[in-house]
Image (cartoon, rainbow, N blue to C red):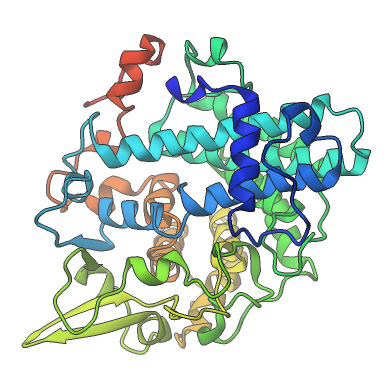
Length: 457
């Protein structure tokens, strides 16, 4: 894989350079970008500068950037419609389910994730070899880097299936790396995330929650457990997050996307003070027909008339006799002082817990967690009797209405619950093998050990 043919020293220097370029993630005097790699992990200030570079990379170019996976998988599933007639970036093919292994957007998705994994591995190695960092700092930095690497690898496993699982920066190993079986990837992620939860604390190291904590690692671990159908283990972790006093459910629909909310587990700060979130611009259009994308009418019509989310998180744009809808969750498009890009929030924990309980045939216990977001949206609470299958269908419906255009939720939720084919059967060109994307042809040509290509491509 060519993305690993880099030297460790270059990575560290680039990270430090990125942090010194108008970054506001940490409030310290940052070192010169000419510091050598063996000096970076000598003290906590420079080590945290490198960590800040990793987070800025997630914010700028990763599936967790506000303009990435929400857009890609909204188009790929059924939440967004694509209107551009001139785009050459691979998005038209993704929207039509006609992607192939040369698709530009898929290559960018794949390569940027592996670049971020490389950075996380460089940090893990740097901390491991450091002789001067305090043990508490070593634990925290390693725990954060492991959590970020696990989050990225979990994304890849869900989107591409069997994947390379690099755990080193040694390009001689990585350029010939083979794929790891998808089941084995999940097993290793359990090991890594358990270590991460042991190393991290619940306390946030920044009041704005722009760095992850133990509860974020536990949320990721719960997701892996759910993919392994280890429902009890997932239930314990999810209940632990909900019961933690750090978090309170946001009852005001108009405040869900404000950065000050105590329902937020983790969010990413815009690059410069006053910058808008990427989400606020990605889905925005007004006073004219959409030229890139708009919410699908299937999504719009999935909401009841009285659903407060439809009223507050969507905006209608009417031209002549035609009305389109855009996502309007993040509203500050200039001089933004109130919004950051949310990666995880408590509402997801509630709905995952409802799902976990339903799979254990505890529908009566699941309903209060399902009803939490419904009632905030002004809808009537579900009551028993309700079958397990009906409960699961209502959960996936609630997932869609709560998380549209957020972090690829629609695709990932449908896939986890085995409902991709049923939900997308009427979408033109949808095939069962579209549950996975193709491994980019460019990387297979560079490393034949990445064969076989995923089915259908």
